[in-house]
Amino acid sequence: MKFWLLKSEPDVFGYPDLARVGVEHWNGVRNYQARNFLRQMEVGDLCLIYHSNARPPGVAGVGRVVKAAHPDNLEFDVSSPYFDARSRPGEPRWSMVDIAAVVALPNYLPLDTLRQRSELGGLRLLQKGTRLSVMPVGEAEFRCILKAGGLNDSYGSFA
Image 1 (cartoon, helix red, strand yellow):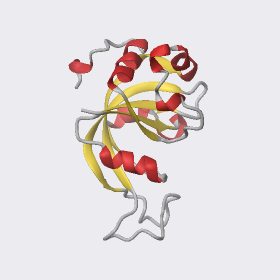
Image 2 (cartoon, rainbow, N blue to C red):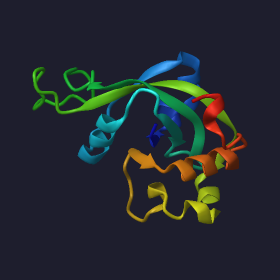
Image 3 (cartoon, rainbow, N blue to C red):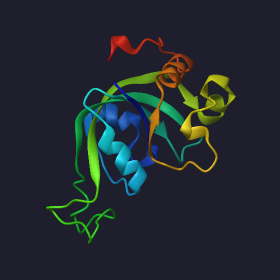
Image 4 (cartoon, rainbow, N blue to C red):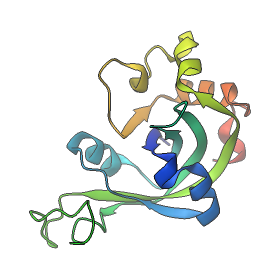
Protein backbone atom coordinates (compact mmCIF):
# COMPACT_ATOMS: atom_id res chain seq x y z
CA MET A 1 0.00 0.00 0.00
CA LYS A 2 1.16 3.50 -0.85
CA PHE A 3 0.07 6.86 0.51
CA TRP A 4 -0.76 10.05 -1.34
CA LEU A 5 -1.89 13.62 -0.87
CA LEU A 6 -4.54 14.98 -3.24
CA LYS A 7 -5.28 18.67 -3.35
CA SER A 8 -8.77 19.99 -3.97
CA GLU A 9 -10.43 23.35 -3.72
CA PRO A 10 -13.22 22.97 -1.17
CA ASP A 11 -15.48 25.48 -2.95
CA VAL A 12 -15.24 23.31 -6.09
CA PHE A 13 -15.09 19.78 -4.60
CA GLY A 14 -13.91 19.21 -1.05
CA TYR A 15 -13.86 16.29 1.35
CA PRO A 16 -17.48 16.88 2.45
CA ASP A 17 -18.51 16.54 -1.21
CA LEU A 18 -16.58 13.28 -1.50
CA ALA A 19 -18.22 12.00 1.69
CA ARG A 20 -21.66 12.95 0.32
CA VAL A 21 -21.21 11.19 -3.06
CA GLY A 22 -19.09 8.30 -1.73
CA VAL A 23 -16.91 7.73 -4.82
CA GLU A 24 -15.76 10.25 -7.41
CA HIS A 25 -13.33 10.58 -10.31
CA TRP A 26 -10.19 12.53 -9.37
CA ASN A 27 -9.93 14.26 -12.73
CA GLY A 28 -8.78 17.52 -14.25
CA VAL A 29 -5.11 17.09 -13.29
CA ARG A 30 -3.07 18.87 -15.96
CA ASN A 31 0.51 18.58 -14.77
CA TYR A 32 2.64 15.75 -16.15
CA GLN A 33 4.39 14.93 -12.87
CA ALA A 34 1.07 14.84 -10.98
CA ARG A 35 -0.42 12.73 -13.79
CA ASN A 36 2.47 10.29 -13.47
CA PHE A 37 1.78 9.99 -9.75
CA LEU A 38 -1.88 9.24 -10.54
CA ARG A 39 -0.67 6.48 -12.83
CA GLN A 40 1.32 4.93 -9.96
CA MET A 41 -1.72 4.68 -7.67
CA GLU A 42 -3.15 1.25 -7.00
CA VAL A 43 -6.51 0.11 -5.70
CA GLY A 44 -6.40 0.25 -1.90
CA ASP A 45 -3.86 3.07 -1.62
CA LEU A 46 -4.85 5.72 0.91
CA CYS A 47 -4.97 9.45 0.18
CA LEU A 48 -5.00 12.54 2.36
CA ILE A 49 -7.54 15.00 0.97
CA TYR A 50 -6.02 18.46 1.27
CA HIS A 51 -8.04 21.63 0.84
CA SER A 52 -6.01 24.21 -1.07
CA ASN A 53 -7.21 27.76 -1.64
CA ALA A 54 -9.03 27.51 1.68
CA ARG A 55 -8.75 29.69 4.74
CA PRO A 56 -6.75 28.04 6.14
CA PRO A 57 -5.56 25.36 3.73
CA GLY A 58 -5.18 21.95 5.33
CA VAL A 59 -5.95 18.24 5.49
CA ALA A 60 -9.67 17.48 5.78
CA GLY A 61 -9.99 13.72 5.38
CA VAL A 62 -8.84 10.38 4.03
CA GLY A 63 -9.83 8.68 0.79
CA ARG A 64 -9.04 5.36 -0.81
CA VAL A 65 -8.23 4.56 -4.43
CA VAL A 66 -11.01 2.28 -5.69
CA LYS A 67 -10.13 2.35 -9.40
CA ALA A 68 -6.60 2.66 -10.73
CA ALA A 69 -5.61 5.15 -13.41
CA HIS A 70 -7.76 5.34 -16.52
CA PRO A 71 -8.27 8.05 -19.15
CA ASP A 72 -9.51 11.37 -17.75
CA ASN A 73 -13.13 11.79 -18.84
CA LEU A 74 -12.74 15.56 -19.25
CA GLU A 75 -9.90 15.60 -21.78
CA PHE A 76 -12.28 14.81 -24.67
CA ASP A 77 -15.19 16.99 -23.48
CA VAL A 78 -15.09 20.17 -25.59
CA SER A 79 -17.32 21.98 -23.06
CA SER A 80 -14.87 21.31 -20.19
CA PRO A 81 -12.12 23.71 -19.15
CA TYR A 82 -9.95 20.56 -19.00
CA PHE A 83 -10.51 19.68 -22.67
CA ASP A 84 -7.26 18.88 -24.47
CA ALA A 85 -7.47 19.14 -28.25
CA ARG A 86 -4.17 17.27 -28.58
CA SER A 87 -5.48 14.16 -26.79
CA ARG A 88 -6.63 11.26 -28.91
CA PRO A 89 -9.03 8.53 -27.72
CA GLY A 90 -6.51 5.83 -28.65
CA GLU A 91 -3.69 7.72 -26.92
CA PRO A 92 -5.08 9.71 -24.00
CA ARG A 93 -2.65 12.18 -22.44
CA TRP A 94 -4.33 12.53 -19.06
CA SER A 95 -5.38 10.10 -16.37
CA MET A 96 -7.70 10.00 -13.39
CA VAL A 97 -8.35 7.61 -10.53
CA ASP A 98 -11.55 6.98 -8.62
CA ILE A 99 -11.48 7.87 -4.93
CA ALA A 100 -13.85 6.74 -2.17
CA ALA A 101 -14.39 8.69 1.04
CA VAL A 102 -12.98 6.88 4.07
CA VAL A 103 -13.07 9.21 7.06
CA ALA A 104 -13.04 12.93 7.84
CA LEU A 105 -10.35 14.06 10.23
CA PRO A 106 -11.99 14.89 13.57
CA ASN A 107 -9.67 17.91 13.71
CA TYR A 108 -9.10 19.73 10.42
CA LEU A 109 -5.32 20.01 10.13
CA PRO A 110 -4.19 23.44 8.87
CA LEU A 111 -1.01 23.89 6.85
CA ASP A 112 0.56 25.97 9.63
CA THR A 113 0.08 23.07 12.05
CA LEU A 114 1.74 20.69 9.58
CA ARG A 115 4.71 23.04 9.32
CA GLN A 116 5.16 22.98 13.11
CA ARG A 117 5.65 19.23 13.25
CA SER A 118 9.30 18.26 12.95
CA GLU A 119 8.30 14.72 11.85
CA LEU A 120 6.91 16.24 8.65
CA GLY A 121 10.10 18.01 7.59
CA GLY A 122 10.37 15.82 4.50
CA LEU A 123 6.73 16.13 3.43
CA ARG A 124 6.69 17.30 -0.20
CA LEU A 125 3.77 19.60 0.49
CA LEU A 126 6.00 21.62 2.82
CA GLN A 127 8.91 21.95 0.41
CA LYS A 128 9.45 25.38 -1.07
CA GLY A 129 8.11 25.70 -4.61
CA THR A 130 6.00 22.53 -4.50
CA ARG A 131 2.65 23.16 -6.14
CA LEU A 132 1.70 19.68 -7.32
CA SER A 133 -1.92 18.64 -6.85
CA VAL A 134 -0.96 14.97 -6.43
CA MET A 135 2.07 13.80 -4.48
CA PRO A 136 3.33 10.78 -2.56
CA VAL A 137 3.42 10.74 1.23
CA GLY A 138 5.58 8.45 3.35
CA GLU A 139 3.91 6.01 5.73
CA ALA A 140 5.42 7.71 8.81
CA GLU A 141 4.17 11.09 7.55
CA PHE A 142 0.74 9.63 6.87
CA ARG A 143 0.56 8.20 10.39
CA CYS A 144 1.72 11.50 11.90
CA ILE A 145 -0.98 13.43 10.05
CA LEU A 146 -3.67 10.96 11.11
CA LYS A 147 -2.64 11.29 14.74
CA ALA A 148 -2.36 15.09 14.59
CA GLY A 149 -5.82 15.20 12.99
CA GLY A 150 -7.38 13.26 15.86
CA LEU A 151 -7.36 9.72 14.45
CA ASN A 152 -5.54 6.69 15.70
CA ASP A 153 -2.30 6.58 13.72
CA SER A 154 -3.05 2.93 12.94
CA TYR A 155 -4.98 3.09 9.69
CA GLY A 156 -5.72 -0.64 9.96
CA SER A 157 -9.32 0.07 10.97
CA PHE A 158 -10.06 1.47 7.52
CA ALA A 159 -7.28 0.10 5.32
